Length: 256
Ligand SMILES: NC(=O)c1ccc[n+]([C@@H]2O[C@H](COP(=O)([O-])OP(=O)(O)OC[C@H]3O[C@@H](n4cnc5c(N)ncnc54)[C@H](OP(=O)(O)O)[C@@H]3O)[C@@H](O)[C@H]2O)c1
Image (tube, rainbow, N blue to C red; front, side, top):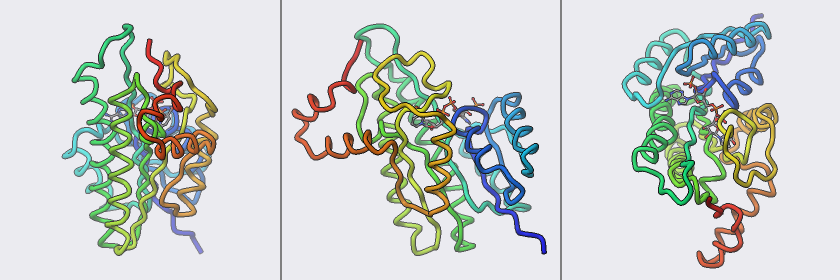
């Protein structure tokens, strides 16, 4: 008897963690829907997944465009209802010049992509999952959302918003049988960190991160934070008064 394939949608699948997630979920039991803007890089990831036995659907999509995300999910769902959606697409920008404030446009771009993009994807799939009373949404946030980083204010804020949104959405969808998993990783070696020279403790590979995300998602966990020690520092830091927290988390407050 043929096993029913699970459809797994991954945004930001053309690079880094998204590409590693696509490979991690590859196999004959999964149909992968890979989304990003760069056709060439996405095509290369899709080819790798197909050689590992996956059925792969590829779509060029800007997650900031809410209407395009809704239209993409609506069309896809006519054939392949989404079992799991991983909102992973993101950008991280920082200012190179010493002691220069992050411009408003840079902050807002990160909010629109990281937080706005995650919301666009989550809402598009959640409305359909609720009707089916089944499904899982995974939001890839960051530990920068737990412990803000001084030279990444827009990025940190976008991830804090994603964590809060994910928790609220998870509580809202619980009676509908839809699980929301909020993932807060630490530093991962991907193109996103190219040129970012600040403190990067416990950095891990994209493959390792993807493995942990898959494990947490398959256990239908509500939250996962890794690596453990970095998450512990962030969590303990939140218990301190702000003035003390500044000193206790000093390496993250370093600015050029
Ligand atoms: N690397 C880290 O240290 C780290 C740590 C914690 C959390 N994270 C989070 O992990 C996620 C993946 O990051 P990464 O490290 O893998 O970075 P990456 O290698 O730069 O990949 C980012 C991905 O997001 C896609 N993307 C960016 N803007 C998009 C848009 N508007 N619409 C659609 N896709 C878009 C990119 O594809 P296209 O350019 O082809 O569109 C690319 O596939 C992000 O949410 C990031 O914040 C990363």
